[in-house]
Length: 431
Image 1 (cartoon, helix red, strand yellow):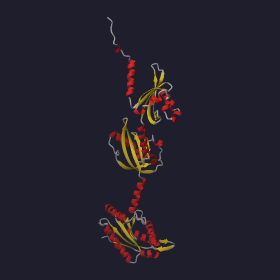
Image 2 (tube, one colour):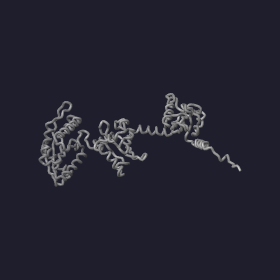
Image 3 (tube, one colour):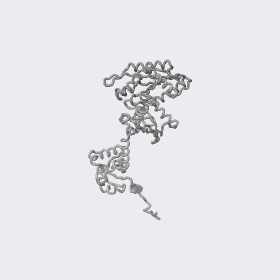
Image 4 (spheres, one colour):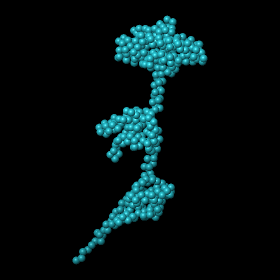
């Protein structure tokens, strides 16, 4: 008896594989897949997003260069990419491509060389995906970063700069190409410059963060070696199992200068440049505290310009201002470098003399009085003679002097100096 064979049960493995492959191609909607002959002419087109429906009819039978913008096609880009794929087996690229209706899109595509079982070259297969939205998002992010007022510097776990973006070039003075590949310590002054790599390794070893995720003020170092104050925040991320850190830095030079200016305005007398009343009284209190701790005497002198009203009335208030400014300079020249001088109010000045006993205070006050008397102020060609009356006091260790009692003693001594004829020094006891 003969054996009957069911023809349907006998399948051609190669045909079955081809059918499965075509089903796979038909099911891929995110990608367009096409084949070319060895010369680059498109022979088959499969699938693709809905918006690509007309591309198969537009491109099948045409050279692959039709998918490129005219400029790229004229420059030979299609042929270069096909040659690379043939030489290396495949080539992955991104770039602008065009649809059959001429509209452009940013394509992410891989071109593979096709060979038969004997190694003979049969043509190419290309898989294309439209990533225009991603491209636009990247460009938008790049634009935001490039116009950012912050520097964004990313380093790896060894401290090597991987990216140098945002305002980094403007803040530090390095071009991105100069900075990338260098150790981030070039952006730091000493002692942090020599210690930074140790900080990274200690963190990677212990996992204990010191600055990650917290904002603080630091000092950076420009390419020319000059310091730059920065607001600094450090973030951490992991990519492909490796740890990276991104520093976000803002130049706060203007803010620091504004703060310094405000501090000057808050503590400096605008006319004379000396300490103002509040600042000199604070310094007096500090010196009294230090004197009590160290067991040293502190001297104070309150001086007043003699007959200052006559100067204002006879020469004008601008001349009076000139006298006050000149007196500030004379006082600075007469006292010790660590004495403190402030404008107490009107034509009165206060001198705080740390570590100065009675003999020291008397000697310094006499020197101040003589210096002022020997000098003169010239205003608009007229010479103005100036003298001062000085009342002084000394706070000795253990006396329990307060700023108020101290100033009261100096003020009473000043009153006696004026009533004794002016242009003189008087010392009073601290009660």
